[in-house]
Length: 391
Image 1: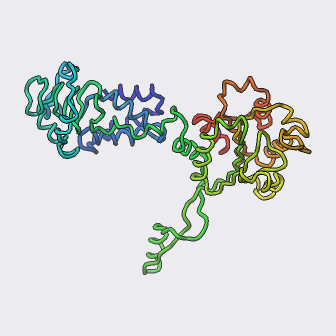
Image 2: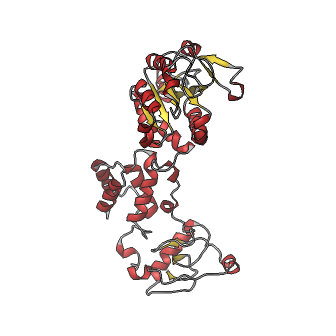
């Protein structure tokens, strides 16, 4: 079973190594946990999962491999349930009034304790009823019946009320294969981190406190600044026109970036970068910031991230006066080249499906200006982009 668990995790693209698998087996051999399903779940997750984006994949594999498993004790300590008991024979539909009359057993611990007792006491197959483990009944144990707080044993959940941690899949929104969301984006942005201690000393430095106390012979508290992500980011967001369908994902990216990066400055532009940008779209005509001023204000240690569909007429990129909103003295391509020269770590995130990029000449042109550092605005693309910025 454990070999199957290891293989299924690898098949689900959870990067589990043989060393980690052997570590888990060693922990089990030394009995570092009681032999029950919940403790085994947490131990195996801690040993085998290195990145939180794989937590949901782990839960799915665990539920599949150990389906129906509620106790890992030795075979002689619990009754063995024949597989045919677990087949769903039918489903008993109760009225709402009947369902309200069924009371929960008093929480997870009592539920599991009673389950163990029933397993030890029950000697035969049972169908229907409200006590024994079986099918079609109101007992909190079994399958195809109903109880407001139950443990499903075999089969497929019908009422979604079974109390089992790995089937709850609380980490599903961390999965890097699902759609974007603020929490998912935060996970991807965490690739771009460089810790540093800056500011006023407010955090207790325990090791130095111990050393200083031992040296002076009296309690000498030593404080230090808190650790923060020292990465500095310039975020340029394309707005309006063809970007309107991508507003939601850009809002999620902006929200996540503000949380993850303490040093974040954002500016808006339209289609291509020209001689001015702005911070408030409602005042974009009256409160603009010169792009050259941005370059002077924020030094080269900032990392530049552009977000836009890069979908426009090539004329808007390569020609003076190419902007559709005003007359630009300098071509947009020249401004973008200055960005890539000043900020060595710069990327462009594109919400358009990567398979469609080849059909839009302007996307290819901007991709070339950024030295191929254009990535799709997906979790996988964000992950690649953050790696590129970190190098």
